[in-house]
Image (tube, rainbow, N blue to C red; front, side, top):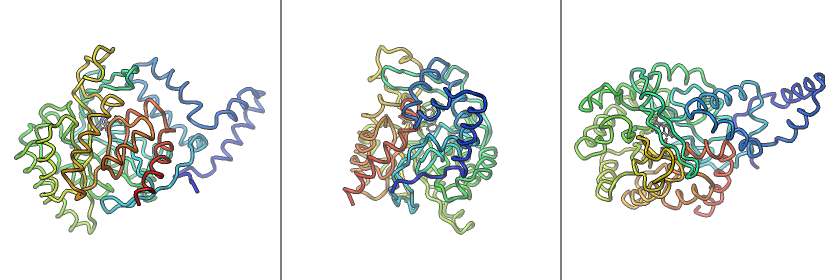
Length: 388
Ligand SMILES: Cc1cc2nc3c(=O)[nH]c(=O)nc-3n(C[C@H](O)[C@H](O)[C@H](O)COP(=O)(O)O)c2cc1C
């Protein structure tokens, strides 16, 4: 039976209270509207129209606060469609369903419980850096609606790892056993030669609070970050991270898996080299992929020439090709989290067929709204059942 996950207790009584208040206020029209709106599928096209009329980053802030408000008022659960359970064991963790929220939407973990309420099988928060930083100047987030794409050059704007930890400790989701990935990065002012120090600081600090740790070396918006994907630099970084992970596992009596997040802009030789390094250093997983620098799919469209990483439908093909090649190179030795351009259930199914064990999305959430979670979970439950 489909079940709702992490819904607030008392949502029905809250709704009854809202109805009776509207009745007392002699607003039966609004009651009819409330009763008619049974899911995000009906509401979201209207909400999106409103948001898309605003600057993208302003809309993001309002949207995230709106989801949190719905959660605290107990109303979010009313709009959430039941999510088909489909437990999967990956990196030693049991995920209630294979559908995750990708990094970047909730960089500081300010909205963990509200997002969890939408039925995701796991959430990834961050990227977080050791010290707070502002990121690039605004505007730095752009939509390409005709291609269902987004370009961002946020530049790891975040409140620093200590603030993220306060938020995680205050959240209910991890206490109830929810799977929370924490994505770590480096500060813009840290020279690339010292990048490992920043990753080690973050790893050490988030270790106890994370279900898994994502090591992000693939954002195109931090100068030279992607250089860390190359041969000796990657070898050195993974060696240091793995040694520290083992020390921390011993110290805390708990092994927290670590996954590397890679770019879609890699050639076949680079993919093979990364796969070898992941195996050699016994990494626990790999997240494929981040945003692309390519503009092939959006050439000539408004905003297409903005600097930054492109996500959404236009990155799907490139990202899924990298996933497929990586899967062949890894030959099942390491699980892959497939992300990039999932805008519907069928896209997610293609990621699983290409070799992913779990999926995540960000841009699809902006274009399709929260109903995408149940749609993807439903499709994947059939795909995964068939492969068992
Ligand atoms: C506005 C925005 C900010 C992002 N910030 C991060 C980030 O901080 N860390 C990270 O690893 N990925 C970040 N991403 C990349 C996403 O997690 C994801 O890998 C990428 O967008 C492809 O998935 P999608 O097509 O479903 O959006 C960001 C994406 C967007 C659109």
